[in-house]
Length: 354
Image (tube, rainbow, N blue to C red; front, side, top):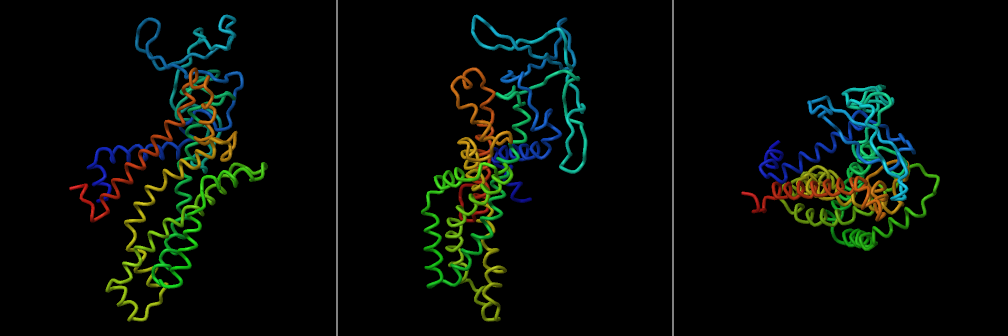
């Protein structure tokens, strides 16, 4: 609680904390918030612009929020498909409407969504993609992958890195030399290019869940070595402390000393590195998915959604397809600001904060 209080003393770190909390909250309740399911598709409504929401009626009076459906037409002068609003019928936006069935938090079956329109209406807050899928809904579902991949990778990276670095630093000598040379060999591997190669040779029949799990494991196995080296350096210093020597005299085993007395002293550093490491995993997953080597369609991630926006015509005429890139930027920036603030707070040698 003290750390959180100090975070909010820095306005940028406080904003970053609130932004990240908001992002994780909406992806947690994505099924409820999203007006459409992740599998929804209407090919007749491909590349529909964002639905405008009106609160003033034709008479200039305040009204309940409403929107109009789009009509797809071919403009012979422009020689392209255009969408025009069908103003013959209004569709009012209502809270807690009935929609597609889903399981709330993966447990409770329901068909209530946070908002929606009357039956027959179409509401696309951020437009649709080439397959007529609602971009807003897919952003929420895609965030579940893009925003969790880092934490899942850390569950593998940190136990391995802590234990490996702790053993290496505690025993020293030949054990330390041998273990560190192996870690340096792992660090010398160009990780991103290796990821591309491994992702490219994965069987085409793999499901997105299997592919996602494998990406997490690969990212984790590539990231533990650098962390282990830093932990090893900290352990070399900590093992000379009096409380460690006292444990040795009392006959405590080496494993007990490492796990119970040395590694807990690295907690502050671990928290800092965890916060600063998540953005790199988010970018790695997004990069692989953008290249078509990560999460595959029809499943959504911010990376594979952004892939569609690489076409020049989409950038010019369908800017809503760039939204995943904006969310990646916001998430990574927020993690970096928060990690920098936590580092200054937990580092007793830092003079940045007064």
